[in-house]
Image 1 (tube, one colour):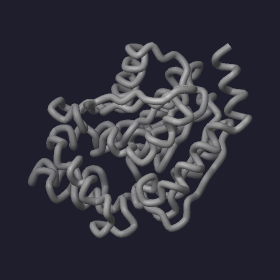
Image 2 (cartoon, one colour):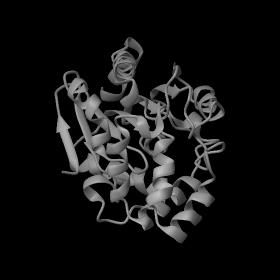
Image 3 (cartoon, helix red, strand yellow):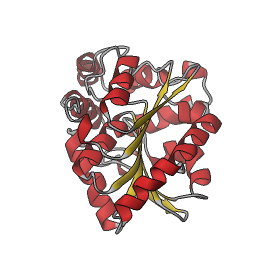
Length: 260
């Protein structure tokens, strides 16, 4: 399985992040599908597509997402991206500005080099090239949870990370390091929610603030006592914030403008 489509209503596309897969959205899909036509798929190199080599550019991933939606016959849609998936979502919203109705940028930023990350992308790539991904992936995934390896979802996160080949791991970091939306955020026309967990160790506040201030029509939600994988740690709060936003009058106005 590398693609899910379930539910009725306006289409909501979920884009997962680095080292994960569509299954990362399991705590969202059941609820969201009662309100939306939910579409989630694995990016090349991840999850059910782990036998492929992952792409090395965010632009390439964005083209993949748009191509997949074209295959499914989806013209207009809400879009949510997490982490690297949030970078991809920004690129999609710029490339296809007339197709995106509501946009949720979750635990992500406009600077792909991830300033303030627990270690630089270059250090992570060097470690992967030298010793493989087992330890560097573990070091990465543990930072995504407030309780590190003690979090009940850590084992599942590591299982997905272990499926990713060394080359895909390196390519993912190269994709992020070579990308930024700085200077282009004003091209995003979708009504946007920037959602940030205040204990995120991948994307610091400066990244979040830049999105919030740089995109024209934006709201901000900060989740306290939450790390990078807030949608797993605090699924109830996360789900409520996303649904309330996407069903708000302002997003519905944007939806009407896009679809008519």
